[in-house]
Length: 372
Ligand SMILES: Nc1ncnc2c1ncn2[C@@H]1O[C@H](COP(=O)(O)OP(=O)(O)O)[C@@H](O)[C@H]1O
Ligand SMILES: [Mg+2]
Image 1 (cartoon, rainbow, N blue to C red):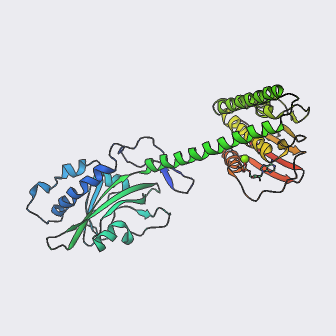
Image 2 (image 1 turned 90 degrees about the vertical axis):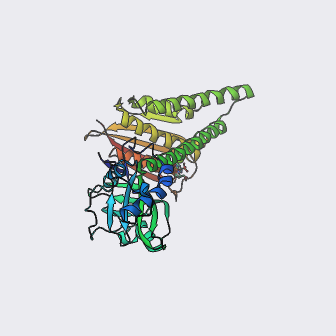
Image 3 (image 1 turned 30 degrees about the vertical axis):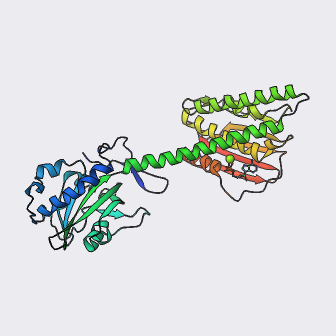
């Protein structure tokens, strides 16, 4: 079975494996690093350089059973020998000592920046030229079927008794899954930071807009609003997993902003039941729009208003309009923040569209998403 599986494209354009548990998982960096010197000696044997230590001759069966990929090149870069794991990572089995297969048995290689890495400039070629070992270098490998993975390579030069380079051995492992998890953790941390900032902004806006005659009344009012925010947050998390009725979603999301003055928030549209993916998208968009309105737009002003209206279009789509008025004068933003990018991404995933009109009297946003 191959170590590489169908890939999906990451935000930075690289392709990652989609499996959850790599078959090499228990064999992380250390065993490769500690074994490489032993196998450099073993490779001497493969090159016919007997160094009075027959114990280093590696039987073919052991070579095959190594828990990582390995191959040996001679001084000209001819690939003399490789194991099954190397063939799996490459997605191919080149003929040993084929003069057309130099330095590496992979189909194509790329640098971490995405540029093509020609075989004669790969780490193995460097080691054969300089004799300097390579430790834990990342190489992106493309198989003949176009699937890409990331390998961590350790290469050791093999020298004869006089110190001349006669070949090199490369021990490498598939770290595609590990890199994917690392990228996911960075994204999650970014999202958590964004959500915390949003919550704090909404709490600030809520406190700023609350007015009461006595301090006890004010305390009660603020408490009520913070509770409403907590409920919205709960609903927001829930709607990521279950479907929801659109009016309920809108009402809950806007409830902390309704305030004392009548007509601050107007909601208008027919009953529509949303399936989970659509509910999630709509909930996130409403959340981003409402927090932005509280931070920068109409809901940041005591007399500001927002109208949310929706309809089902003839071609079976949900058309939702968000219209702000009565807030500070709006100038079109010069930067797209995390919130805008999140909205655009999730709507695009649903094959929907979003459009922002930055009128000076308030933002108007139109969202269209297909209904099941
Ligand atoms: N309702 C709004 N009224 C006025 N300006 C807005 C509104 N919503 C967003 N903006 C502007 O658009 C920018 C980008 O918003 P967003 O992508 O949500 O990022 P963030 O909220 O992190 O600043 C904001 O910095 C702000 O200048
Ligand atoms: Mg925002």
